[in-house]
Image 1 (cartoon, rainbow, N blue to C red):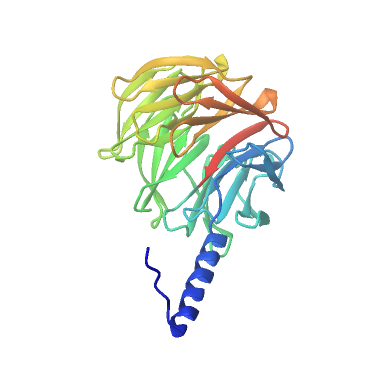
Image 2 (spheres, rainbow, N blue to C red):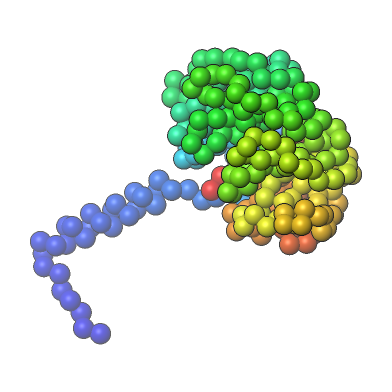
Length: 322
């Protein structure tokens, strides 16, 4: 192969390009698994490839669920025992402080632009709206008894809030700060998972052993799926063809074919499993087993246990930071 000798004037430009590539690599990060531990009042960060602990970050009493900003630079931990949210610099793994919320702060949803966060407070039946850039709570509004979990619409205009006690989902206009619709969804509604198309969402209803199917276009409930054993955490496969649901009372996980809406497989998943996450390639599931103080790694194909990782006391939330 014939070599081309660069002129001396071009060499500095090449060096700059190499240095810039190095800076860009330094600004990126490897994938991470974050697990919240309620009794330990902290969040642990694991390497999903090696399953080794990277670090442990203090949160507050009852560290429950963890959510990331869209750019992955901030993490929000809802603390049910402290009625607040710990905001964490996810890059440097440092807590930046806490923001007061309502009673039993359960979960945080972050808007697509990363500027607004909504905290669901089941104890007070309301949501706390946080201005993320200034890290302050700016508004509290009632939604319904047992406001458990929320998800923002892709345009950031609405937040969908699952209210367990009122058996519905509130559609909240974030700009107007008012509920514009209450969609019946079933007793004890908890996890709210929209399809990739955003035409429908599945909502777990542990109090009646069902998953509700909600039409997100017309804002109405259009069906249910029988899922025994207190369906709790829920996640779709990346291609949307499967749903993975934690059956907490049965200590197991179920696979549901989203086309037929039938359970195709179940398998044991520790003692009192809670929440579930899926790897971006769709090969692995990560399930917190609260009474075992473990994070379980399951094969998404057949639910076989691939690994068990020791966590802090009473792990609950789990999230994949890509």
